[in-house]
Amino acid sequence: MREEQIEKLRGVVRDCVSKHLYSSGIFFADKVAAFTNDPADIYMQAQALFLGRHYRRAYHLLNASKIVLRDLRFRYLAAKCLEELKEWDQCLLMLGDAKVDEHGDVYDTKDCNVMYLDKDSEDREINISAATCFLRGRAYEALENRALARQWYKAAIKADPLCYEALECLIENHMLTCEEETRLLSSLQFGPEDGWLSSFYSCLIKKYDKKSVVEAKFKNVIQLGMKGPENLDEAAWTKEMLHVFCDLCIEAIYMGMRPNTNFNKAGWKYLLTAFKEQTGHAFTKTQLKNKWDGCKKDWRIWTKLISEIGVGWSNELGTISASDEWWKTKIQEIRGAKKFRQSGIEPSLLMKFDRMFSNIVATGKYAWAPSSGVLYDDSVEDPNANEEQLDLEEGSSDSEEDEIPNFTDDVSNMVRGVNMYSNSNTCSSRKRKERERVEVQAREKKRSSEIGMQLLSRWDQMVDSLLKNSDSTSINRDKKGCSIHEVMTELHSIEGVHIGDDFHGFASEVLGFRRNREMWSTMGNLENKMKWLQKMYTRRKAS
Image 1 (tube, rainbow, N blue to C red):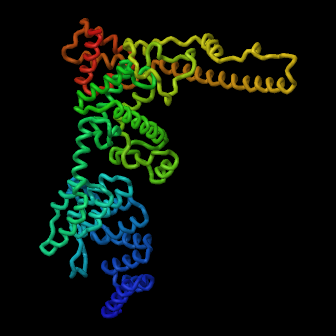
Image 2: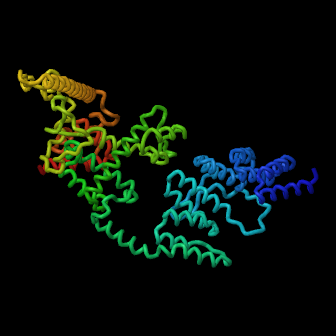
Image 3: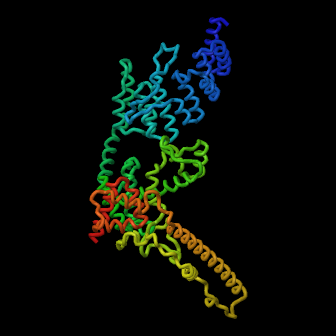
C-alpha cells in the first residue's frame, strides 16, 4: 500500500473518531498500524480503542509495544486504561517512580530522559507532566490517601496552569485552607497570554476569603485548650507524640496506675503532666482517652490481620505485604481494615501496643484469680476508675515465683459464688391451685438451667486462668534481651553503676521481675534505660 493511501486511511480514522464512529475508527486504525508498524499509528489505534471503551485491549496493545516505557504518551494512555479499569496500584506503577513534597514540587523522577513523540503539536498543549501528576493524584485519592492526592494535584497545576482539573479537585474536595489556596495561586507561572486565566482562578477562591477569619479563631480555640473540640484531629498527633504517649502509658501501667480496665485518677494526672512536659502540648483527659481508645481499636484490627499465615511486614510498603485479593477479602471480613491497606502499624509501635492492650497489669486487690469470681469485662467502665487509689508496691504481683492457685478452694468458691436456688423458698401450700404448682415447677427447671450456665462460665474462666498462670511460670517465657543475665550485663556496662551500693541493690530487686526487664528492653538505648531506672529509684526514696 502506497503512502498516499495510508495517509488517506489515517484521515478516515481521525474523521471516524470525531464523529464518534469508534468501531469504524478501530477497524481502519488496525489496518494502518499493521501496514506501517509506526509508533504514531499504534498510538492512534490505542486511542481509538480507548474511546471505544475497549480499555483492556488498548492497554495490552500499548504494553506490548517496546516504546511504552520511553514515550510518555504511551505510558500515560496505558495508565488511563488502568484508571478506567479501577486498577489503581497498577496505574501508579505504570506512571513510574517520582516523589513530591508538600509544596507540590516533583523530584527524584526517572522520567527526565523519556521521549514525547507527537506529530500534531501545532496548537497549545497541556504539559504531559501535568497530566501524569493529575492522574497520580486521582489514583491516590481513589486509594483514600488524601495527603498524597493533594500533593500531586498541586504538582499538576504548578506544572501547567492550564490543568484546570487539578485545581478543581483541590477546591471542590476542600483539600486546601484559604491561605494555602492563595499561596498556591501566587506560585503559578502564567504565560503572557494567560493573564485572563489568573483572574478567573482568583475568582474561584475569592468566595472563601471570609472563612480565613473563622479558621484563625478556631485555631486559637484549640491552642487555648478550650473544651469545644474535644476530638483533636489526627493530624495533630505526630509520630513522635504517639510514641511518647505509648511510653508514658506503659510506664503508668507498670507503676500500678491502671488497676483494671482504666487508669485511676493518679494515672490520668500522671499522663497529662508527663505528656505536657515531654511534648509541650496541654491535652485534656478526654483527648488522651479518645487517643487511647482509637489506638486500642487499631491494635485489635491489626492483630487480626497479621495473625494470618503467609503475610508479614514490609518496610518498603509500610504495611502488610500481601496480594490485592487477600486485602480485598480482609476488608470485607474485618470492619476497619481498609485504613491499613496503605499504611500499617510499624513493628516498634506494635510492640508498645501489645504491652498496653494485651494484658491488664494489676496488683493487690485488683489482681484476678479463679477464686475472685467473674473477670473484669474490658468493655465495662469501672465506676471507681476516677477515685484516688493507694500506691501499690512495684512488682508486688509479678513475681516469677507466683503461687499456683488452690484448685480445690477455687472450685468451692466458684460454686459458692453462684446464687443457688433454695427449695425452702418454694411454697408447697396445699391450697394452691394445680395451675400454680405447674408454674412453680417450670420456674424451678428454668432456674436450674441458669445455674448450670453460670457454673460452666465460671469453670471456663478458671481453666483459662490456670493456663495463663502456667504460661507465666514457664522458664522459657523470657523474650530475647529480657533474661536476668542479659539485663544485668547491660546494667553493669553503664558508667557510674557500682555493685554493692544502694542504687545497684534497688536495680537488682526491680529487674528481678520479668515485666520490669521487658520494660527495660523497650526503653531503647542505655541512656533512656538509665533515666527510667533512676526515676523509679527517686520515687522509691521519696516514698
